[in-house]
Figure 1 (cartoon, rainbow, N blue to C red):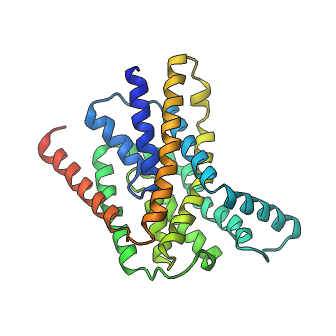
Figure 2: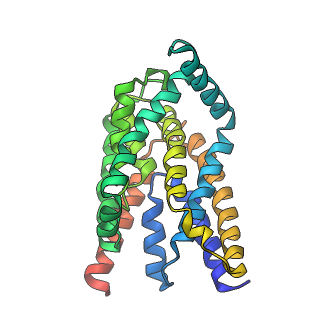
Figure 3: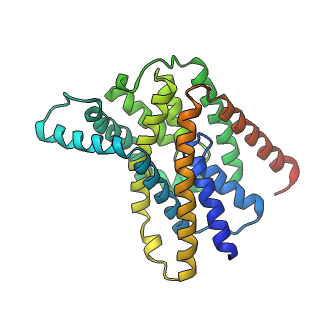
Length: 273
């Protein structure tokens, strides 16, 4: 097994686990190679790992997505939102996706380039770890998914737009938004996971030319290995978190983020370059 394949599998495992746990996948994918002294992985690998997480969330929530897409189509045909919750969720997901898309198209590359360094990542890890802790502490956390409205969905979408900065955590900031708006933990997490699908898919398609440009078989082997690792670890992470938060708060994830942030900042200040 060559080094490139091993690195791809490790990065795939990290991508899958950290995309859905509220601890920031981008932070770990930036910090680990930096810490281990690995060369920066290609954008094509990054796209393939994100595609794997898209297929994972579609697979895990396949029954929900079938209902959401069917009810969405019916709402267009019948020109009414009256009906099951999934009919409203179709439009709420679209509404919540718009802010992130607009931010990404207008200033996405500049923001990501500016904040894509270990120091900024460490700061964002700590800052939004504190936000997650406060959301879980002071949010009412008593409303089901059916309590969502178009306005609340848009606010959660604004939260998602912040995740364009590496280290924020898309799942973490959208879950925090849901908690602040009164959703219970399971509902906040589920909406966050459903909301991830269109934004991950859109970002992957936008950069698909990076994968199409590949021609070497060795690269494709590495990408398949990374894709498989990311897909499987995503399924595990989604299932684990939904079970975990039924009886536990998000505190452990907030503490992890704060501890990792402090450790990274200490390394930068006292340990070297």
